[in-house]
Image: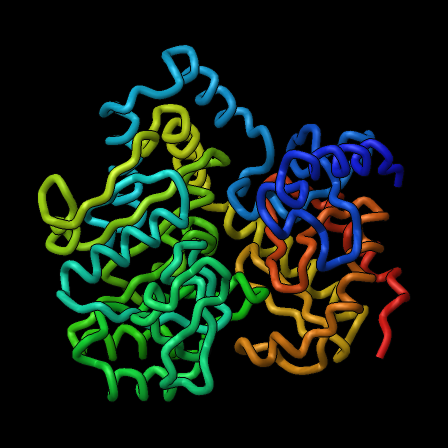
Length: 426
């Protein structure tokens, strides 16, 4: 495919934007390619500045569950724009969206809207600490919760080792209260609580990990987290920025039947606009200003344009529950095509409308097994798919997202391209 204009734009962008991109994975470094610059999108397709058409399985990293430029969402945004872009004051849309969130995710009795998933997580952790009067947080290797300083961490020499910063510019003091456990490993969690239990404010977890590739929770793992946090009077925070309204209309907590104390949302809740939200039990959320002593604020939080997009998206999902069955069936077809083509050369993980193909012959159940993936083989596969009109995440450790706009024809074309792949090695 022609990419001259994209290449030129990338070189120009590097003169005034760090790395030429505004989020690192967009640079395509992990797949040894030049990033594709997108001009427009519609339905299941995106179109780059060189005029190439792609079937899109990134969906803006998840928000576009209805597809790009969905008619109802666009009309809602256009109508809201006519009245002004932002006021920094309360609007009716904020109330409507928060009420809709509570209806769909009942555990979120009270909600605060913010502008991103990172803000939502950062704020929820602050609330958990304020409510429990404790400082420590447990997170899991391979689970990503945004780029706030206290969560950009990696494991030390063992499960009981406190974390060290995983980014330059983050003082060690910022992460000294972040403890690392292993996803799907109950013993690693138990060990932390036995040693630090009376100082742990909360566990934060992606109920389905989707930032080391898609990794499903083992049977009973989420319930174990619920039980141990209850035992130690800690809080359980579900980071549903990705899974919220995607696994089901009630998110992963409805799908698995495990109810957290606090939930963070992003992506779909904004329908393609920058929105995040955090919420939970009223007695916990009452800690937040102006009711309580935990401070959090934001000029653009709950702005009328973003909330209009969110209301339209969530209402469409609520009124059309068959969407979830459809996109799960489409995902199953893609997974089967990959399994049929690659056999035991890959591990294919999928749930709902999330999917990852790991280039490893090991079953991927945690961070360590995900890291056995052959990233060079993935890069070759990515390039082949892109050259054949399939746009997916330019990283082995990101998810594929399937939308309601993906047609049977889109899925069959993608499956056929997968079946024709010949370059895998090893």
